[in-house]
Amino acid sequence: MGEERIPVSRPDLTEAEIAEVLSVLRTPTLSQGPKLAEFEERMAAHLGTRHAVAVSSGTAGLHLAVRAAGLEEGEEVLTTPFSFVASANVLMMERAVPVFVDIEEGTLNLSPQGVEESIERSYRRSSARLVNRETGRRLAGLLPVDVFGHPIDIDGFQDLAERHRLWLVEDACEAMGSEVLSRDAGGWVPVGRRADLSVFAFYPNKQMTTGEGGLIATDDETLARRVRRERNQGRAEGAAWLDHLTLGYNYRMDELSAALGVAQLRRFEELRRKRRDVAARYGAALAALPAVRPPRAEPWARVNWFVYVVRLPREVARAALVEFLTRRGIETRIYFPPIHLQPFYRDRLGYGRGAFPLCEAAGDASLALPFFNDLTEVQIAAVVQALSEGVESCVAVRP
Ligand SMILES: *Cc1c(COP(=O)(O)O)cnc(C)c1O
Image (tube, rainbow, N blue to C red; front, side, top):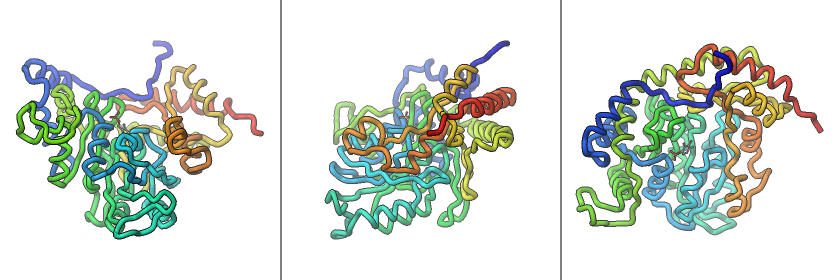
């Protein structure tokens, strides 16, 4: 067979998905039909939330979620710099201000303690609202992210949000199928059940896909109604096509995507089991390479990994290693270059290197390996072998 390229990700699709999408094409209803309703019902049942509202992408979902939460222009939101850029972008879209807090080293997520300290340090109370001591802006809410699929400490965040009267929007776009042990809920609960609004994404590299797509989960009827209206051009439910009650967007999920989602969700236990098996095999293979640290889950988390990100030793020149692996036909990706160091955020918010040392250290040393459900034992061995050789040969000359 010769050298076969190993991609960094690949969706897990079968004849069942193909049949489900084709069935839509045999009808005249390509948008706002029965598949959307079915997908939403199944997702709500799967997550155990009262409402599930499917949208055209995870980013669209986050955008509608922060608007529904009540975000206003000029307000601040505490969020993580170690994330995909969309979690901060949706705040900028509303002319609000993302205020980054450094991550916690183990999970690479925000911790409630870290966020609490940041509140104590930077905000004062003024008539029941928190106001930034320096900027004078109000703190509106919290937007933590389940990075790489590892859940946030949801009990801690809920408590924090309640005590400070902040809304809580969870970016669960990387965490479909992960579970968190919650004392408040009395056991294991799926990620996405507990925040005011939680948002999922179904881009083809996620744990399940609809092509492009996303979904907002909430128990709150009013919030659900608002995001439904705003995804559909501000039309009230049941309103005529050209009656627009409020400002809105076209963030609808089409029937083809919803059908794909229905088929993927039917197979979800299988998808999760396959993903877990690949992660376990990686873990075992990487045990022979102690310099490279595999991702780890806290005891209170059952992680359905989105990407498989290893931490490289400090002395390895990552760019050279990426190049080395590419030459071997192994595709990798750098998750994440910190958001605060992206040009737009440097320019707009004035951040620079050194602002968030733990985030930057993680960003400098991490590498996502090929990770998808059908990755074979042989491919895993090939990746780990190449990684082992690469780590040896790509040691940077130290200053
Ligand atoms: C994938 C992802 C999103 C949303 O992505 P879309 O491409 O818009 O579906 C948002 N936040 C995080 C952290 C993500 O990984």
